[in-house]
Image 1 (cartoon, rainbow, N blue to C red):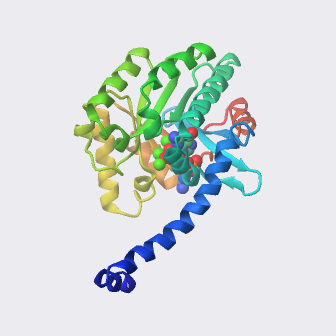
Image 2 (spheres, helix red, strand yellow; image 1 turned 60 degrees about the horizontal axis):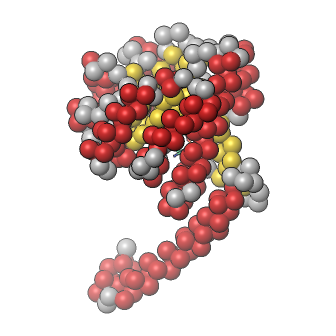
Image 3 (cartoon, rainbow, N blue to C red; image 1 turned 60 degrees about the vertical axis):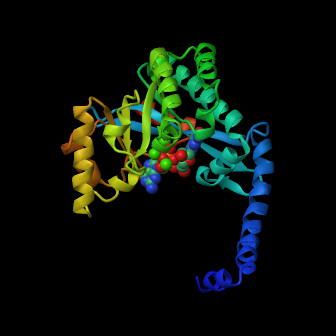
Amino acid sequence: YKAMLKSKENGGNLYTFYRSSFQIITSENLALQTSLGYALEREELEVYYQPKVSLRTGKIVGAEALLRWNHSQLGIISPARFIPIAEETNLIVPIGEWVLKTACQQTKGWHNAGFSDLRIAVNISARQFNQPDLYSRVYQLLIETGLDPKYLELELTESVLMQNTEVSIVRLTAFKALGVQIAIDDFGTGYSSLSYLQQFPFETLKIDKSFIGKVNSDPKTKLITKNIIQMAHDLKLNLVAEGVETQAELNFLYYNDCDEMQGYLFDKPLNVRDFEERLLAGKSL
Ligand code: C2E
Ligand code: CA
Ligand code: CA
Ligand code: CA
């Protein structure tokens, strides 16, 4: 901070200060960028599935598809690290499409195996959502995989929808007409209110895990979360709590009538084999 103040006085230093740290970050990112470009063809990417559980029945009702990258030298790299790089470089478009296809194919397979009500949620990033042909690509994938559109849910954050509200409304309306579900992800972390979000057609609200983690320690968060659930129900929305880690959090959600939960308390994101094991065992809360 001192260094910044000082350099503000004599101009040039500030630039130097930033440039050097910026370069370190980019050279590291550049290496990741290059290898991310090959990750698809090298089959280093894998889709994991985190169960979503109904609080009424205790049963698995669906899953969220979450991407994993098994880097040949660096091991597993977190999506929090590589998704932003994929966004910057537009690699998110082919990668995101691959996730959609893999997840739809996989879910169709589970339907055929008798788990015929399973829903699949796929994260859609800003770049992907802004592709003019996203709708036709999704439509095409549904036809190719034979998955009934009503079992596919796209997770979008408020900030993505807020970039251009008119375009967002048009896109979401098209998906609604197709029967594809829309969920607002990370709800509560953006700056918008639920009443403002109501201009968009969507079915599901996912309360961000930062709220869930504090419902039992912070009275204000508890009150806000109760109100979000109440308001969502008044608006006939389906409510999902993410990041549920403790029994106390689960109890809170249960008594406040939340619809579904997702979190380490039940399961972390799983590879296909482990997810199928849970399905076959009929694992429930
Ligand atoms: P997200 O969409 O908010 O996904 C939820 C994140 O919370 C996941 O992190 C999940 O593993 C984690 N999580 C689930 N339950 C718990 C819990 O009980 N406690 C805690 N602390 N965390 C929990 P993950 O898998 O590392 O993904 C991070 C983010 O990367 C995702 O956040 C999403 O924004 C992005 N991402 C992941 N896969 C994809 C993808 O296929 N496409 C796009 N566009 N983004 C993706
Ligand atoms: Ca998500
Ligand atoms: Ca989320
Ligand atoms: Ca998130």
